[in-house]
Image (tube, rainbow, N blue to C red; front, side, top):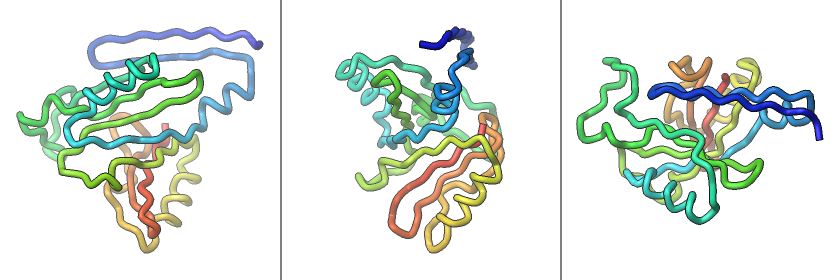
Length: 166
């Protein structure tokens, strides 16, 4: 096994985890992951507590809508402040699930998305442009406070995709 050092820091608004390793395969695997993204009808926190119990998992992150920077472009109603904006749970050594609450009622088929984390804006835009053809855009691919690019769409086959470039 190659040398590895993990460093974690958190305050009430930021979680920073740094992994220092000499194993190039591990570096590549960690930087390019496909993770299931689960959407919930206002029950994400409850569901993740159940998944922690079921898998003995580790909660990596959970951010509420109340923690968002104030913005007129993304107003948060008082009734939505306790909703989960983003969460990530490790359920196996290399297996993660992510999730959040939706502000709108979702059908069961809309509750799962394939979340793709890419290192290249060019690759993200190429895949985005191909998958959006004859599909529908949920959130335009754009810069956010947490990523260089982030967006979500449903392709022409009805599969939901989330793209993030860090």
